[in-house]
Length: 421
Image 1 (cartoon, rainbow, N blue to C red):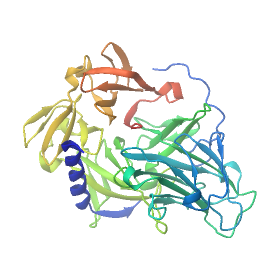
Image 2 (image 1 turned 90 degrees about the vertical axis):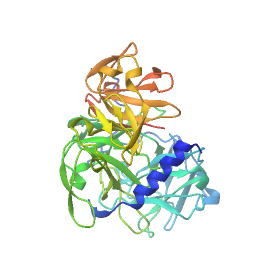
Image 3 (image 1 turned 180 degrees about the horizontal axis):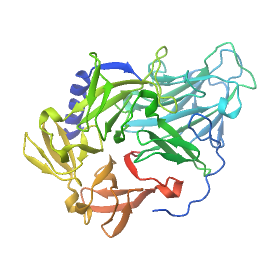
Image 4 (image 1 turned 135 degrees about the vertical axis):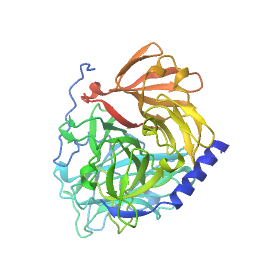
């Protein structure tokens, strides 16, 4: 583990220990989206299964093995039946969404799903989607804690039989927050929401309302997003304008564009919490840069590439070490000090642009979205695009254009991103 990673882990631990919480709650032709009905709750339907459940799988020792992108057809055969599935954890950690479709496909099954660590007992997160139709979990298991197990059962242990079928999809989707409200694949969304998108091997696209801001009373535009669940069951958000919210044990606090807030969605066997079309959880302050001297108009957080790697809306200066950055840069900063992760001025054309969406990839790679449109390193990108740059070579690199929204019927500007890593 290198020094940079060690420092990041230390910072995350320190910040986590200090948190307080309160429960709250340009267009190109695109092929038609393959048959995927949309339920009334903001989720396009599941793709065809590429695998079938193999019984017995009622224990971790008999678990059916899956890989990301699999869609398995399963069934609760009889009352009390429990199905286990396993996924290998690579170096680092396995990050996944496990999405059950049952009632939306006509099954009477009210399912419950849990993500378990390698001991097959310790729960990372669970969901029975008590406020909706079918459950979904979003989480990660570290390689030292793996493999990852998924446990599926009926919420009511007294039901089961041939009719109690389900489809389980395991995947790691792209997350985008739009700059304004609209509709994609029949799903309505607002600027404060976060959407997930994934292309399955059979050509089916799946969209979901991943974070429904209206469920938890966010009314301002979500302009910052980091949804890596590798450390905790939380996602980190930032707002484009100040909003008073229930955060902390003493009640309402103003959340400003200089703040990042964490939405804690994790649920245990007995507690409620979920992402998806029925968003349930609570908020914490994650980090506030204003007390550390980031107070100028250009020093608002504009994009979050990692927990503490961010881009600002304009020019910024970090008081502890005097570092100066611009809106095309990405800086790692905590406790008033910062250092450049990505010097955008060194990438041809990027100095003239404003980075509004960012995520850190493998090695020295960064996924970026810019405001408006611009010519970057000989290629034209717009605010509907996600492209890839290398901070070591200071060039746009393969696959160059990672994602173009209109190819997926998403004809909206992007405000924040979280990409498969």
